[in-house]
Length: 73
Image (cartoon, rainbow, N blue to C red):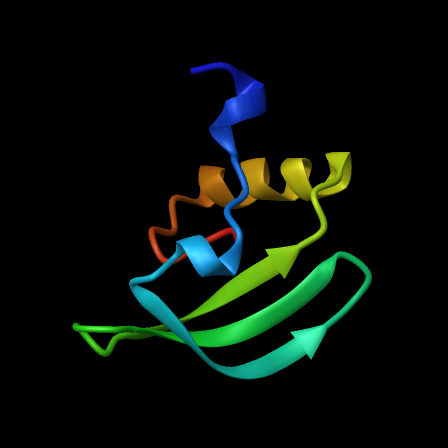
């Protein structure tokens, strides 16, 4: 898989298995929401961000941490 496609951003409308619960915070790169899985009812944070070079670098660092709960929107 090439690096450009490795961290493909998806609009929230395409991530149908999660529903936004509430806004947790916002900053220069985007917004963070508390989201809940539609059927499992598990909750996690999802970051909806502006696709920039810095955002891709952040995604790489978080992926190296190995947290399966990290989701990029």
